[in-house]
Amino acid sequence: MADVSQPEIATAYQDVRENKSDTNWLVLKYESARSDKLKLEATGTGGLDELRESGQLGDSEVVYAYVRVAYANDKESKREKFILISWIGPAAGVMRKAKVSVHLADVKNVLRQFSIEVSAREKDDLKEEPIVTRLRKAGGASYDGV
Image (tube, rainbow, N blue to C red; front, side, top):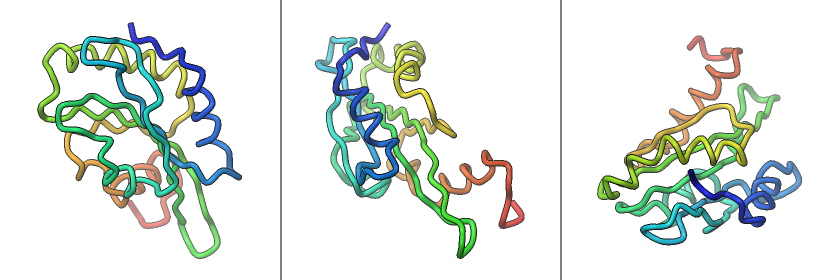
């Protein structure tokens, strides 16, 4: 079981969800290599691109992220949806990888509201275009015939 009780996590989650806030992503990391306690590591305002390039997604790490993604279906509509990311770096330890499914359930108890879940193993898994396509499909209305 993962400890996701740090108050800063809930505060950052509310900040990402707040429409008037510029903050649109947060990252949770383990306190140490052997710890099951998660802490708020970083927040940002530059969306998926910034998260991907931020250095927060290390090759030897398991990281959880929550992101607000803004996109338009046409000229007049703008939507904002939320995604939950579990990042498993290619060099992450075997035991840490084995605990992801159990710990992800605990993370979901705090980062509750999201449209899609993304399991990322490489940074290309976090490119905005395919994620927006998935969000559109999850939303039920298709504006591109997909």
